Length: 190
Image (cartoon, rainbow, N blue to C red; front, side):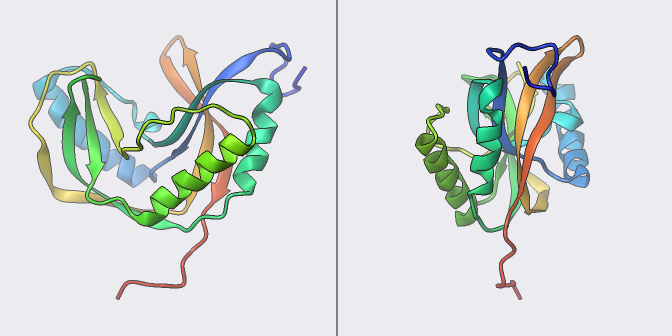
């Protein structure tokens, strides 16, 4: 039995994924925009503490393998990068309103590629659809036209996480299981 999960057997699985958490000021900006769209479109807004950019979704993983995921994270060396979210969009199939980055830096796709290779090497399954970076803001909502933000939302990404998605009586809660820093580049924009 894992001492961190005394109520669970060794065969227990937990739902896990890799993601990037924006800093609090970015979550506040995105939440403010979600509140404005929710007034018009309805739906269920993502809680401020759950705002994230998914890197790879694994689904149910045995507790016995969580340490392998943590060690896998440590083998990945990737560069820090900047993200700018400039559009709010709608996915009809998923019925979600989401923020989309203005452009996706190559460092983000490098991190995704390195992570997927490491997961394949260690025998983990993951959602292997074409990666489309986005941050979900509202679920089960009515459609909107793509809207360009008058003030884009910027942040510097310097770390990424392994998270457990746990269902509680108050909705979904994300529990940090691992954190990995990204390397700072010596190249600076002038």
